[in-house]
Image (cartoon, rainbow, N blue to C red):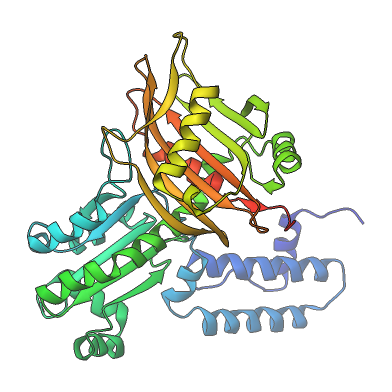
Length: 411
């Protein structure tokens, strides 16, 4: 049977003294009742149910809506929840002006705005933006960011930030925070938007707050970085993955590494591959090199520096003759640390490089990784050249690529 116009349904209902509109004020309720009425009226019109059944269904539908949506809660459930926005490393601080502008704010900035290691020009590990609780509540756009730290003194009864913290903690946890000094931070998600993280950092006096900042900083920084990963991933792999390069690296080095689609091979020879990404403002580079493991002296500052300088002299140069890349630990120190790198014994190195006999330079990060059978070392080395540009983001992208590293299999 062909479809019948809705006007025919309404006329049919009117002739039988039936209304398809609810007297409920909200348009959501009217829409729901209208939907039920139209569906049932269609069946009446097609002689599938009688009018008395229609009236019963309509009445029951109204009762369901009244039971479910007698308050504004029902409407809120149907409202679209925004998705949190924000660039990586951006952290919004919610604190009273007196806290932010005083010694407590200085301590917070000392840790969360400390220098990212190691860049030619200093950049902070996080970009901090401060608002008071009143400013947050007065502007909806300020509540749509991704990462927050809510920082307050619980003994200040007049503080709007303290009131926010206590409300969000709930009476039981607020009382616990007052009595138990070890309970000085907690994390919540999606308070105002999806994908949002709020770190509540609190204490009962200034000394407690300073102590809590120092003790909680590493864990909070790690959680913020974890929250940013999805955004970083989207940026790094915007051009998808370079599956051909991934396969080349797997076959030549027995490792897995997710290479972004905008990298290409510059050199591939003698247990070394150099991959590059080039655009008008950035040269981003990845070196992978394999050497035999000899002894623990290779896992030293001098050991990793020696490997980098050998590769730099052999492969990396500018257009100037006799130029080559070297590790520059004179202008800035090279930081090294033995770490667990995805389950493997490794040394991490951070520093800056320059070109001998030319005016080029930039930051680098290296990982020297021991193979599962302890017979070989894999060097992952990333370095960028971006004159006049901030470089923290580019180095974080290299770190993120390297975080995908895995040995293909134990030999």
